[in-house]
Image 1 (cartoon, one colour):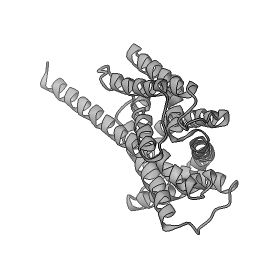
Image 2 (image 1 turned 30 degrees about the horizontal axis):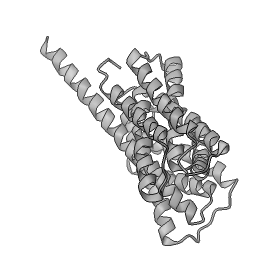
Image 3 (image 1 turned 45 degrees about the horizontal axis):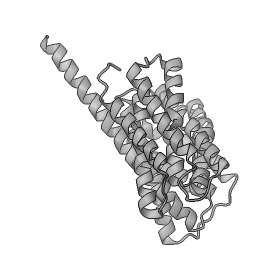
Length: 300
């Protein structure tokens, strides 16, 4: 093999590895969503207001980031597109996620969120022509089986089953999936900070219309709201954007399935949420899908 070819392969391998690392960081930060949200809701913050502050704090961080890196300037038409998508992509997504956390439990909400790879596979194939290998298809299937087990066992709040909570979790999964092709479409033209900064403005507008917003929260609640906005919104989406520059949509989506496993662990440790044995089996299948995909050596 020629030296140039060896060097190219090494660079490609390094880029792919770093892509997985960025996505794993994003998954870790997102895994804190359930446990942090439960502290806010338990402290008297309504689910939609919790979603509002998550979007608002994240938006401020992204706009500051974009200003400091001189990437805030966006065409007016494109900024409006980002904000309009934000009405759905962050407004509906964040609201559905918080409602699912309240009604069905943090662990159930984050697991149901990961029906997203099916939609991502569909969008990536339709819009970007990404090839779905047998290994990728198998990983998606295993992850969905794990998600279904969690869903059909009734959730993670002992003795409670909420159809609305499960429906909100599935809606969150679909709306979350639309982030992947939308971001991939615009990432070559604008920075992650600019895209999400303007997108979150749309989310703030839509969420602020349906729930009174309060400022008289305790310092402890403001701490949890800051964790939601800074870690689970700003840092998570920044890492996610860096990862999508290096690996495919489907690989990123399935690798993020580490999030429900970690999210389940946090709410089990801090809120005593628990699954049935079949529910725990579902979590194990999700983790297995991540390992299967990250060992895939096929070309992007």
